[in-house]
Amino acid sequence: MSISLYPFTKEQLLPQEEKLEVGRRKSELFIGIPNETSYQERRICLTPDAVNSLTFQGHRVMIESGAGENSSYSDKEYSDAGAEITNDTKKVFGCPMILKVGTPTLAEIEMMNNQTILISSIQLKTKNKAYFEALAKKKITALAFEYIKDEDGSYPAVRSSSEIAGTASILIAAELMITNEFGKGLLFGNITGVPPTEVVIIGAGTVGEFAAKTAIGLGATVKVFDNSITKLRRLQNSLNQRIFTSTIQSKALLKALRRCDVAIGAMRGVDRCPVIVSETMVEHMKKGAVIVDVSIDTGGCFETSEVTSHERPTFIKSNVLHYCVPNIPSRYSKTASLSISNIISPFLMKIAEDGGLESAIRCDRGLKHGVYLYHGILTNKAIGDWFDIPNNDINLIVF
Image (cartoon, rainbow, N blue to C red):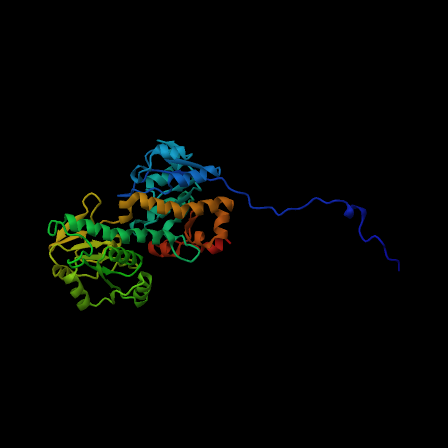
């Protein structure tokens, strides 16, 4: 048997064309940002700096004239950042991707093209079946800020909003203590020789945590009530100091409310926030005490709470001043807009880098979790159960 001295053919020995791995093709985004029409909504999804980053990468951003004014951003700032400014609302809603803080109205959905991508909040408790049917009819792919997850499994938009609301609740209370007709001129804090402000916080979640941090920073004495020992323990560790904490027991809570200057409602519920403080308890509070019910977004945890507005934020009941404005972050619209922009911008960049939303949600579980409609198909079981709408698991559609 003869053995060849040349195991390779002449063709194989010739220089071969190098084969490189084919990367994913980047996608160019065309984003429309309309004016906010939701009640008391003053925020905007992207700041001029975020728009500049997107346009620098070759993406297009079209903004309706005046969309940033309530957040102290002018049309000129957006124009200088590379955005296209227009007065034509239909033109903005005609963009392939729509960014909106509040949910669009049925009339606004009608202006959208088929297969549009919508990224906004969902505010589920304010929605009805017709809203989802209108989106489905247009075969919209919709993502909700509230449902998008971070790498650690947390909800960055929800946490950011709660941080602002918690901090703001104490600042609002401090302001009301000055202007309150019962105790005009009271300073929130701890001044030598003067008893410190006493604050009761009901709820030990993110809102309660940041309310406690702010109140302690101003020198107040803080008491926190919650039925979750785990949350109370986590709060103690986060504050890095020991404060009064207790499960919600009527006798202990009433005693604390009788002595406090400020009470913050920071509870959350599955459907409606549970009513923790009865009208009788409020009647036993100090004359001129301040209640800030952050939980009013989901019904309020004080029985005496009634929804108010940014224009007329307070009312008096049982000689106690109540502040019950929903969507507190909107009061601090520029800070809140910066926060939303910081959260959403990296996701937009990722969608572009991955070659579009379809590829991005395949690669990013957190982003996929934010999808509640995929080409008109409802993919969120909670929404389906709530409104009795057929739904599909997105993992069986996109994999």
